[in-house]
Length: 376
Ligand code: SF4
Image 1 (tube, rainbow, N blue to C red):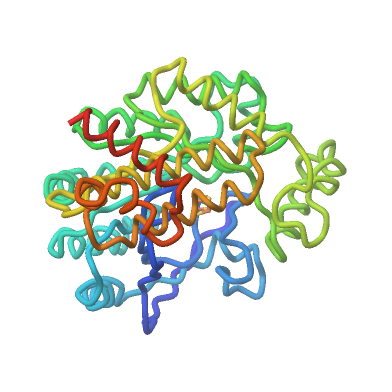
Image 2: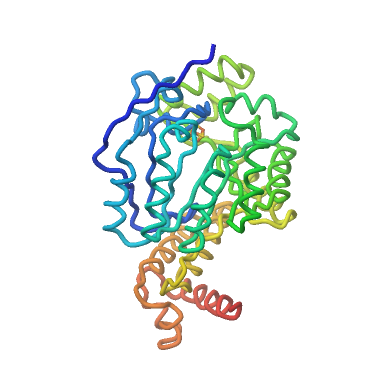
């Protein structure tokens, strides 16, 4: 018999996680969530890692949901004190029907003008379409759906077992279509790409085709990570339900590894890129540009550098080159002047004077300025 969920209200002291800059994957600088634990209970979920999972028994993660009853107030206080930047929020597991905290947190984002990024496995997010449209008009919204296989995928039933408590992928794609029709940027996070379960070409093509057919603008893929108690839990599930793959996963993820120690991630990511191009969508999330932002060109250049460094990593470029791009992207993110103005006033020398840019990257930035300005 399916175990029933229990809900444990509590009042945390803080709710907002902050980073110095937006990350280069989701383009968010903040995150805040109303619940701990997730009734969708995906077997691979990284939130079972010790640092995110406060349960003595890891299997409670899907059935004992801690409810941050003061989440909206905490969020309002916290966002009132920080610069406006995109926030990763929303959690539409079944608890949301009962408590409605995700909606109240979105209301705070709306009132304070914060752009929002949501990543969901549930179509319940459609309930808040009205509010998301208002936030989109004011500040910007992206609603992404986590999908790792489709009913057309060869191994669908087997993969579906991994996330059997979450709503079916068809429902997520139907929701994606509704957001696309409403003019909200939407797409797929193909995460995690599970070795030998959903990393085959047919599945990648299915997920990308379904995304394009339902109005999605991107498919962002990434691999599986396994740490501490999450790894133990995952291997127990593998032993019970995927015994034929257990040895292979244990070899890919030896004790203390976190990511796979070998495998074909680069090949898969390049294939995702190729298939996305064939279906006319992106393999990266487009950076949301905040309306009225003073340094839009800087943000666009950071986005271009971040995308370039991602492809350099896939192509096996030396670490020091990748790091040079990353540091230049951070420097331009932090720059308080408009980079186009710096270039117009001081030319290449001005770009070279930006910390961590240097002469080689200055020429890359110069080319990007010319390309991006000619597009406008
Ligand atoms: S829906 Fe997301 S947060 Fe919930 S269990 Fe699945 S992977 Fe984890």
